[in-house]
Length: 397
Image (cartoon, rainbow, N blue to C red; front, side, top):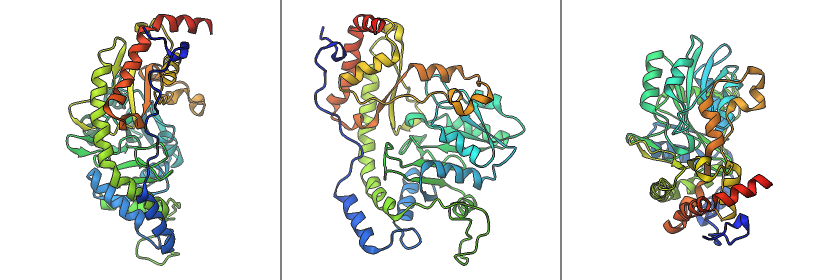
């Protein structure tokens, strides 16, 4: 039995996984062309909008608005839907804080709802139980690229006259029953921040199928201007959330490369899921048969410390990292953030447990060769074989 690297042995992997972000001459050429054109903002150029149009088509939506980042796309969505003071919006407990603060930015109240124990996406049953006369919308966060139950959520929203907003920051390329995410709800919000599946460092795209909503969001993100009117005509209060042409130039190249990366990630994730499922104490995030493709922003699996001699999650993660596995980390439950401390702790036991028992791996790992991807399972098995020794070390640290 080989010793773990964290216990003084040799790491299973000595070669690094692919780095992120990835770029080549396509980004360079687009950036130089933008530089030399002198069209650096969207009022003079069209790269950002062409990227958003192409991305919308890729996800199966009619309209795409390019914006500064994925937080602003959410804020614009809520503003365009008329969400405001006195309204409540349901948001899952496992997500980045922006899913909630975007609701607060328009004066509404985020209501934190528990998640499904397997997918970590919002639990539709818990969501319905949280609906009140003040509820205006539900945010479906497709966690790690795994798609929330859009059948249940669209039915619930239709029946209770609620807006569905999809937070797809993790889910570029994810699809449900043959239809891309971001095209199911009133709006679909995507982030292009540095860690995301395609990136310009920052950036975002807001998708919708409804022309009137697209126009409302366009006005809000463009300083309250009205299309077709004088430049200094401002019909409503808005903000400046316009994507630059520099971001559009990079993202055009990123989108051209994405379909092949997406194919590789999905194929490798399926095989890794199968390999990890054979190890006691490891339960991969499931792939619902209705989810055709998973963006795989993170590769997530559930960890049962009881099958690893009680080794704490953070010690388990440290052991994987020492063996050369690129580690991420779960979000905490939103209710555990200081931001919401004054509101009392919401009853979200599934989310609290998930934050303490799930392992999140960086998506760049899935772009490696198949045998390198399967090294993740070999490392987990190596930790399992050494669990008693690792537990003893943990007890003395």
